[in-house]
Length: 87
Image (tube, rainbow, N blue to C red; front, side):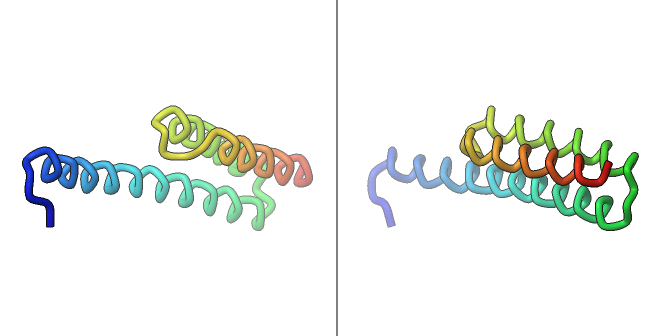
């Protein structure tokens, strides 16, 4: 347990940031799963909508610093490649 005031504040900030980062990552994972479900059901229109949602969430996570830029780019690339196979 921390003793000084600045360390206690840092602990509080870490808790809040952890919760925020976890929520953003979870939202991205959920969107990717919905995209994969649309791909599995051969729903091209639904997959296209979900791909746009995934790209937006990945960009948002990257800009917030939750996800590294290369990770986001890799995920978007794999999503678009999977969508192009469906078409």
